[in-house]
Image (cartoon, rainbow, N blue to C red; front, side, top):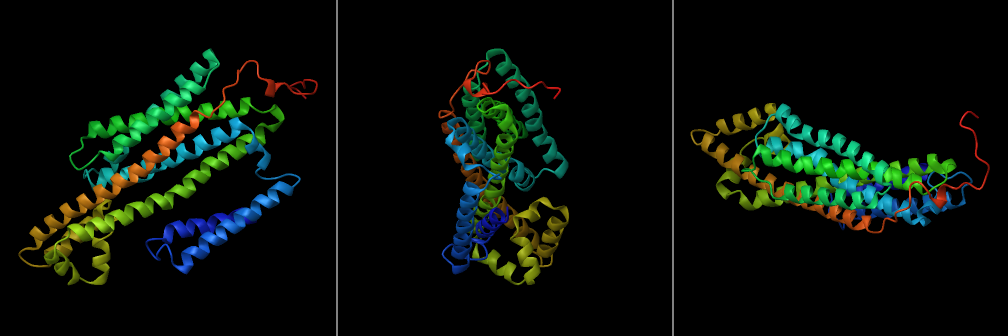
Length: 335
């Protein structure tokens, strides 16, 4: 476990700092990635020779386990963009409050619950799960792609429709992955298989969070420097350093106190302060829209990879499955 932590932490720091604190080719970033890969390789070697491994490498020799792990990994990566960054878009670009942002995202949770129940019933009645996996990841892909088309003129109805598609896709896919992988192994391995699958899902969220944040900040900063005229840059440079950092922080768009502080900073500039403020806010919205669009595009790529991975998913009969036939006498559930 120490080797696993020692491998993941440098990678997370590398993805978080690269492009922000340091350049991608800097010795610090290269060293972090190198250390992360080295410790993960050490973790793999330890697991191969351990009597009771945390993550048994031999599980990945099973086609169903590997394909479901890939689908789960990419689905979680696509999901995190919606959960983490949609509130920023809704509040920062559309100008909604925190409460309204939560209300807009609520349909995604409801559609997730409803679709997971319906999907479970279909699996129970048909004994099939691959078609649902394909349809679910397709819905996720369409929903993620529609997010890339959103902008300041996007209506609340459009956002709700998009998040409902995301919820339907995730609700259909994630539960059936558990069914598929548990169906492919003996009962005595259920604990190990389920725990490893859950770890893969968590790993997807851990890895993608700093990557998506890096994409947003990089595109936002580049777009901001391109759109901002020299007159506005000169006016901002007259402010104290703390206020300048506040103006260029996209998180300030979703904080009422920060917004008030930003407006107050421009008011102190004189008679044209209000005009400069309105111009600045317009540029901020355009830059944030560009950053969010690229971020959601990355999410769409993950959704497409999840969709393609479902075609490698082997379908076994849930009622008569050779992997469930234990080579031992049945054990009473009371024992």
